[in-house]
Length: 399
Ligand SMILES: Cc1ncc(COP(=O)(O)O)c(C=O)c1O
Image 1 (tube, rainbow, N blue to C red):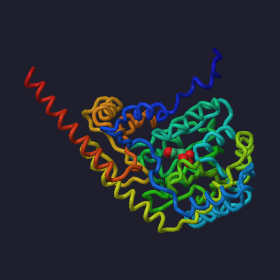
Image 2 (cartoon, rainbow, N blue to C red; image 1 turned 90 degrees about the vertical axis):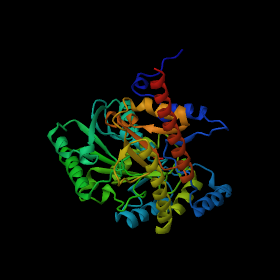
Image 3 (cartoon, protein in one colour; image 1 turned 180 degrees about the vertical axis):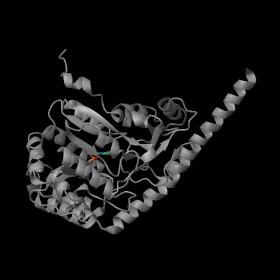
Image 4 (spheres, helix red, strand yellow; image 1 turned 30 degrees about the vertical axis):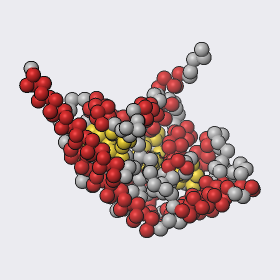
């Protein structure tokens, strides 16, 4: 038996990779599993994107290795998107690096910038990959709490008072997953100023900016950000292309070059057909996002009904693909409660602990499920609650 490398001991298999196997195992033709767990859009990308992929794939000349930096047409489409949506001017030649989703960039950025023992600021609660990757590169994790009292904002004053001298990288993620919190320009400016003062890299992971969000924002639009910031972005959520693995990192040339040094040693460019399709998808205008957000808005209403019947509380305004909610006080162990619901109703909801200690009392419902399925989940949970109430009455009577 060959022993795995020590660094493997510092990470666990991704929660969803384990849990969803169990969830799938519960599926049966009599009662289908309703998965309200993962944020994988269930709708098709725009027709122009799919057609561009097909047309490109039909061309025999399009199947070779590609340039590590992607084709100019794709980079130009990203630059246009940044200009139109965030009013940010990116350098098409040097300021954009296509990635296989923003998740990939989390690893590449950590590899490119963080030395062993250096500190990485990680939001708690937050996307679990930030911590896993920090562990894999031997960094010291510095979770920073997002406080419910601050409507899940960063406690910037607390950060300012702490020793930031060994921090090399700070992950921020606005709109934030899982809480749905957006950041104001002032908050982002304060964070950028902190990064400048203490000379660490600040990276905004920004895949949710187009979902249920009135003011899409890029950290690169903040004055002075270019000096210290990178931004990850992706077509996974905004363009229903999660499985296509299309994203990018944007920022100044020197930082992009450092990421490219890592990435060009790990893969050999992105399939040309995907790049053609991505460039097409990025042309989708306001009507695409209006329709998308109308759909998610309707789903959110249905998701809130589930949260109400569960006795959860939640903030009215949340951006992104999820609704984040606090479990009722009488629930002692939220993870166990989620499992009870899963085994009793075959509805899977994400327990908040997977996003860090600060998420322990919370749950997250994904909007990547039709209103019909959300309503069916509501009915099952309502029935389950009623049966539980009856059986607890019966057992009291029998006692
Ligand atoms: C905060 C956050 N960052 C990154 C990702 C990964 O997205 P992508 O599909 O672009 O890799 C996700 C996906 O769920 C996410 O929630």
